[in-house]
Every structure is written in C-alpha cells, then in structure tokens.
Image (tube, rainbow, N blue to C red; front, side):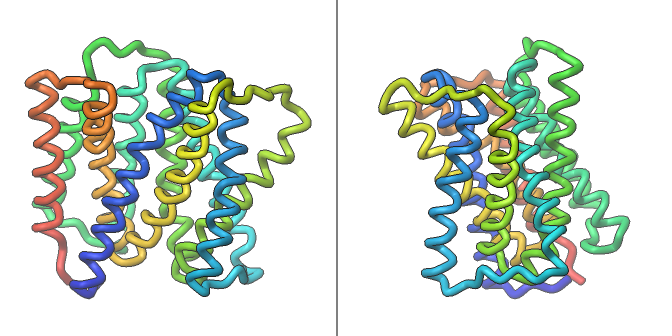
Length: 292
C-alpha cells in the first residue's frame, strides 16, 4: 500500500490528536463519576453532544449524511461495537485497576498488525515486529504498578473491549472509504445513541452531576470522545489501519503527561524507562515501515 508523503504526515498528526483526546477521556470521566454521574448518564450525554457536534461538522465541511443501503447494517454493527467497547472498558475498571485494563486494551494494535499481515493487507517487516514487541514491553513498564488487583470478570471485560476495538477498526475501513471519516463517526455515534434510548426504559439509572464541575466534566468527555473517533478515522484513512493503531499505543504516554500536570503524579525510574521505550519504539516503527 502506497501513501503520499504529505498525506502520511497529516495522518500521523491526526492520530496524535486522537491519542491526546483519548488521554483526556478517563480524566474527565473520573471527575464526572466522582461527582455522582452514572455510567449510562455519561454515555447518553456523550451521544447527545456527539449528534450536535457531528451535525455541525458535516454541514461546515460540506460532507453528506447519505448512507448507502448496502452499508446500513455495517454501520449499525460498528456503532454497537464502538459503544460496547467503551462500556466494557468502564465496567472493567470497576473490577480491576485502570492500569491493568488499559494495558490489555492497548494490545489491540498487535492483533490488528497480525491479522493485517496474514491477510496481506499491510505487510509488517521483521524490524517492525521488534518495535511492536518493545512497545508492549514499554507499556507494561509504564502502566503496570505491581499492585494491580486481579479479577477474572475485569480481565474478561478488558479483553472484550480490546476485541471490540479491533472489530471497530476493521469494520470502519469500508465505511470511511465510502462515506468519509466524519459521516462514519456520525453514524457510529447515532446508532450507539439509538441503542441507549432503547435500553433507557429498562434501566433505573438517573444519576446526574451534583455540581457545575460534574456537568463540565461530562461535556468535556463528550467533546473529546467525538474528537478521538473523528481524528482516528481521518488519520487511518491516510496511513492505514496497522500504522494508525500502532501509533495509538502512545495513548498511555499522553495520559501519563496529563496525570502529571493535573494530579502531580510522579513516575518511578522503571516507569520512566517504559515511557521513553514506548516513544522510541513507535518512532522506530515509523522509520522501518514497509514500503511496497
């Protein structure tokens, strides 16, 4: 697969923006949950915010809301997978430490690289495989603190979230190529919101924010949730699924920087080693990328 140099740089920049957006999500969700917001309330609010923002983006970018009949079922499935990925990750955090859950979900680029390689969609060379290994090692050193509690339920939910992330990435490729990244994000958000509306009568969860900070956190979560998907899809369109997914391994790095700035959390020497190992391995992966 050949990519234009300028398009590649744009794609890398967009993926980095997506990673920054993803890093903001758990912090805003943490504030919202601590203010009494329930998970269903947060997911529903994100859906409403997404509809407003994405409608605006479709209009100003002169994109189209048109969804071909042949892609309706695919868009529904992808939207539900995207919703279940977030839901499973949030549920997993109830049972296991955030660090362990994030580590499991961050394995999805490796799964995508393996599948893409053996399907001969995007070949990965030996040096790139080594880089993937170093990224995983760096993530382990960065996010695993040695005191994580273990729960079969939590681990299972994290694995399910990781599998959902893989599925969303592959399912969205056809959508992005046909209707574009913004329209794809719109329908992912739209079908997820419809599914939540269907579930709403069967749930008694009505936990709203108790302060202005909680409302602000919920709004920030919704805005950056949409940014994460839109930037990721736009970047993936330019550099391919494998490289885009691999670059998202920098998510924990951004999250660590934000935690340091906002919560004054310090790293141990081992964690700092993992931090720089992830960055070096990702840049090396780009340097040794397969050129056909």
